[in-house]
Image 1: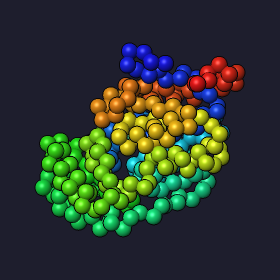
Image 2: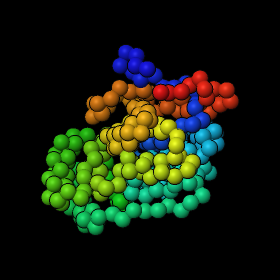
Image 3: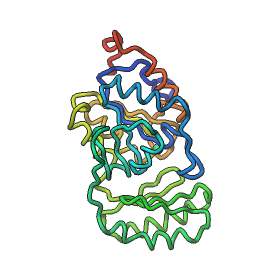
Image 4: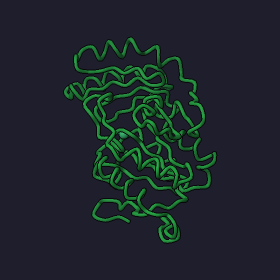
Length: 262
Ligand SMILES: [Mg+2]
């Protein structure tokens, strides 16, 4: 499967997969501000088609709240994990369930805002189960901002962790991760018994990668990310979208036996 440092994505859909997809940087190109992302035409129909071909075993696994995912992908409603696993909807027709978040986290908001206020272009996003600090518009803030947030998180005594993503630092309850979300999906139909595939681009996806690999699944990385010690399978989100469109076009009849991934 390895070729020149790149992982070759499987070209044909195996209907026994369970597909877990990160959103920003994986399905969607990253924008200067999280609210400015665009959903290219063709993506929602392809996801809808794949959702059907996989018998419903396709989930979005994102740092965004599920309500935002629903707005972005409307009218499509998919199984989803939001806020890095702190909220989860196991099936499209089920309600969103939120896990309890350590009360230390919301208590940190004033301090996070005070730290971020040093840089006018740094944006603090209160997500409920996570606090994101975006510095895409002030890249020079990265080192001092990270240092200050690390010191604050260390002082909380271990229940909160700092995720160091692309142009974002995020505080979250460390019990809820993309890996714990994958584990919850894999325990219930239609996900259980399938081979999980996780596609992601950033450090927060590492929990998801490990969760699928633990049960013989496949981790596929989007782009070259020095923070991830992994070979990429896709050059960027556009390549992921082309791959999904290609899978969605294939007729799964007669291909399942020829494309076992193991
Ligand atoms: Mg991402």
